[in-house]
Image (cartoon, rainbow, N blue to C red; front, side, top):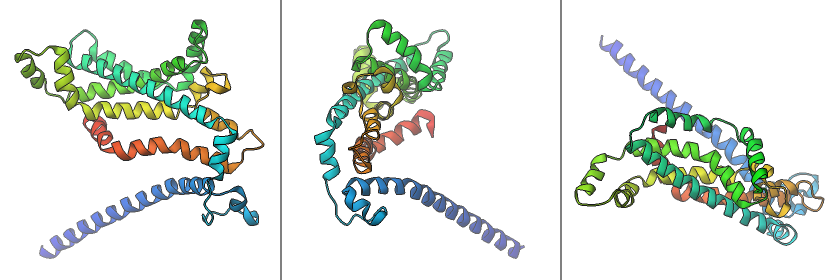
Length: 288
């Protein structure tokens, strides 16, 4: 009996060890496939084309770092204009989506009305549609209203894409905020608005920061809506503008990788400094 128990314990320990090894190997494999493209992008971006393609092969060891590719982008292209366009549209869509999500999520949580649960799930279901499905109807609407080639139209289009998921996330998160906190404030004479501002929103900070990060990612990485809504070159966002560089004779892989690196910096910084809120918001919001 003792021998059988010992064998069972060893077998259990071996199984746990194998599971741990499998997890580590999977994480290592995913990391390799993630890091290698980023490494290649960075190396080509910080080297001159002559250095990168010296000897008829691609040199992936940065022996002579250079800012030449970035200087070409800033001096010979509209990268700065595209970048500013992206910032304007992304910030506008992020603020609008987060505001709508907070208001709708709080209303779905704290007010009772017929079909509330169905409405919340319908909002999430609407997020399942691909952006290209919404692109043509939105194009027709914006064309009718004379809003094409405007930051306002693109902001609304991107908000239509990100808001449903943000609303659902905040609906889930507000359910974790005890109603007793609000009742305590009401007893002390606080209005509902002041209660939401001073009590509910501070507690729900991880939730709406997560919603804002998601809305930012959707807007910043968007290509479809910007390409459909905008037709003037000076109104393009950085993702659409970067795609145009591949059609130019004077722009090569070095400049293309440089602009790709610039596009990657804002999401990287947000993930780096706000990942704590992101993880809290998604886990408490029921997305664990």
